Figure 1: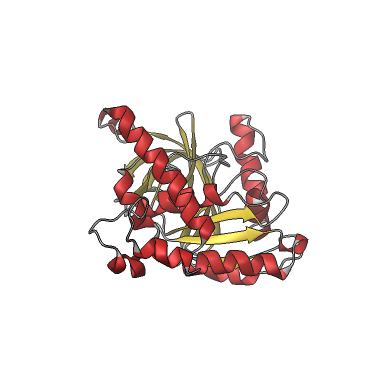
Figure 2: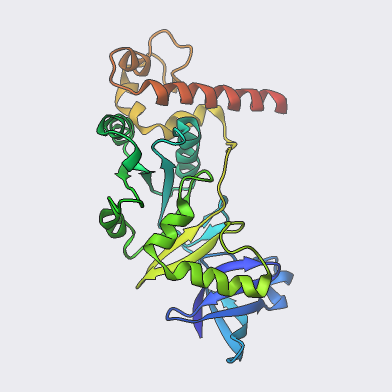
Amino acid sequence: MTGKIIKGIAGFYYVHDGSSRIYECRAKGIFRNRKIKPLVGDDVEFTVLNEEQSEGNIDAILPRKNQLIRPASVNVDQALVVFAITHPEPNLNLLDRFLVMMGTQDVPVIICFNKIDLCGGEQMDIYRSIYEKAGYQVVFISTYEEAGIRELRELLRGKTTVLAGPSGVGKSSLTNFLLPEAAMETGGISEKIQRGKHTTRHSQLFCVDDHTYLMDTPGFSSLYLDMPPQELKDYFCEFTPYEDECRFLGCVHVGEKVCGVKNALKEGKLSRSRYDNYLLIYEELKEKERRKY
């Protein structure tokens, strides 16, 4: 049989058969000997050992189309990063770090602001302007009022999507809203592993519709990036149209006197918050580089 790993804990892998059943499987020793670790999102071949108890063995891991470092997962098409638009106010520095991290892994990102029932349209316009100009798709939802959910469903259809964001912004609630059976699936697994049913401690994949999967991941409160500081600018795509006006090839848009990006910032063509976050991350990477030598 073939299926997809939707969760892995303590050497057990929970494989969805593509229909309605989840099998608790062990991976054969050959994977450990070859230092291959099955990951959430893996398409696998498995053998059913006990149909009544839904137990089996993973025999083979099918070829992966990509692999994310964080969250550890494979075969991902896109990321949906969720922040509350208010209560609490979104940490844009954290959001921008996430966008860079996904950019380094070539994963397209949809930015989702939740709780729009608690704010006015002006706040939505501000965040839309910042991130649509930066080249990202932005959606606004309220699970409380069911606003924006239909649009979101269409963006997810036919894809495997990583759902990420800080704790407390409604990621798990969104998962349960999109797929009420998710709570039931989590409960079924929890009976075996004796874990809480509602706190996301590990990445877990849910089958939302045909060929449509949503991966709920643990919330994060910080992200640390590791790359050469001069490469950071490549992940702020809105800088690119103004780089031809920089005096120096490879300008990093920080201390240079003649800089097209800094001029665009002065003229209001670029977001101040995005540029300020760029500077903070750049200095952090520079400091990390200095410590290496």
